[in-house]
Image (cartoon, rainbow, N blue to C red; front, side):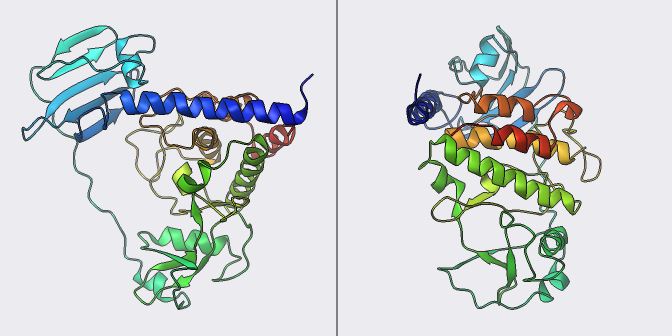
Amino acid sequence: MATKNQLEILFSQEVLRLRAEYEQRRVTTNLYPPAGRPHLELDIQRGDKDSVTYWFEDGTKDGQCVRIFDVPGTLSGDILRLYRNLPPLSGHFEIDGNDIRPLERCLDHPEFIGDDSEDVSVHVAQLPLIQVDPAKHFVKQCKYPSEIENLIKCQGGSIPGRPLSPNIVQLLGRSADGKLVFEKLSTSAVTFSRVSSLAVYKSWILQLIDALDCLHSVDIVHRDLRTDNLLFSDDGSRLVVCDLESHWGERWAPEIAVQGGLNDSGWSPRSDIYDIGNCIKGMVYANNPVTHFVEWNVPAPLQAIVEACMRESPDRRPSLAELRIMVNKLET
């Protein structure tokens, strides 16, 4: 029987193998640079049959339009999962399963969505003024009052206040030019590449659960939980959830309306739990998927955690308390 140390080594080796296999697919697909052409636009549509439309640069104003439907186990599904390349065809066309059809014209580019930032001047002015030290602080332009309101909730009702959780980013105040000031932390992009240990992943997932438990306890649904919104202490031991706008967010939980608005899209504590699954995948692959159709299996025993978080029915996903029990049972 393998020892715990041997199992940890085997787990780490499998993580590194999976990363290398995905990276090979990523750099050789002609669906995206570097092997493929840049995009003028990209549009994802969800429904009974999801699709992605690309407008590739080809020297024309509108570009070459290619629509690819997600049909698993076929040419189009394999292209979206980076297992096969886009056929070298000219003109506008679509791929639906194994069928390739010409398009009569270039499809319209998606409608431009303008900046919907709100006036936050009154909210920012009430924050304490901080003398920013670039070595210690990170500054961010605030777009929505909801971010400041949520941060205040998580700090006991005032700034700097008393943080309710060490795993929620702490707002320190405002800079002289009206930006939000936070402790400077390491990004996930820097941190993930250094780690392939199940013990570390277990610690991070538990901290992520603690962060969401804090948010949900004060009636905050994160909505935009993804690896880009995870920060870390320099030694990688502490995970911190940031970007508490609770405005627009991830739409990959099945119950979230693709075209919904701020208040009717269906974000809930259960959709946050769904997004934990994608965060775990990002930790393991030390990357963000170039498309959400990429199949990222993770090594056992994390795969069972991911599958539980990402169950199609929100009611079948574990609660945070149940998820914490599952993660605590992981042997490291």
